[in-house]
Length: 277
Image 1 (spheres, one colour):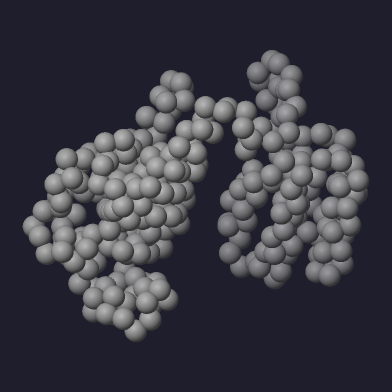
Image 2 (cartoon, helix red, strand yellow):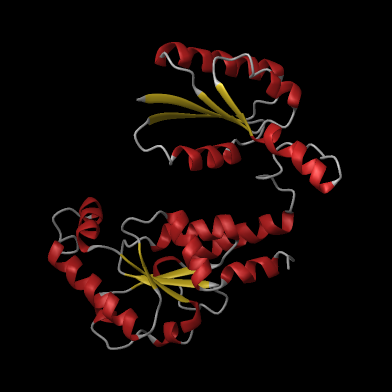
């Protein structure tokens, strides 16, 4: 079964896409063709969106799904005559929240992913720069790090660090465990002194070999034997040092980041940093 899904917003459409995607993942046997339509902030643009939605309905011979976070109800109302099932997040939740909170909303487009909180935005940009300048063991000066990821090469450290920086403002560094490190009984001293910030990533050797083969085909680096050796040695070393470890084999970057924040209690620090109780 195939179904077209539209994420429509007068902002970036990231919120609509995130919410909608969370629901779609509950239906594994359906092939969803997902289309994002951002910045639909006028009646004319909404009518153009309706044209795309109706065309998809004709091609698929079934009504598309539309997840929308358009703030202006006049604009969002233009979507209702379309040949689609409409899931309006603002229409569903805002009115009950107004009743509960006892105050009317102050409609603002793009607030969720804009620069309303400039301090928080600057924190995320600074953290991203930190992750880039402390990637792959470039710098061993880690005093300012909130988290330090360790693991063998290509185990997912870099994308996880960048995700934590961009989304949470976490200064995350990473260090690849080399063969030289794995031959020693202890982690390098510059890492051991930050033991409370360390978090390990591991990966199935077979998956690691596939990833490395793309990067360096037919090399010793990508051989299954080498991958088995490095993964097993790294896991043993991290276990002996008491470092918490997660496998990136079947875990998304988003889940890895969330579990690392929880494992290092950084979710509490982030709340305090934002001034929340």
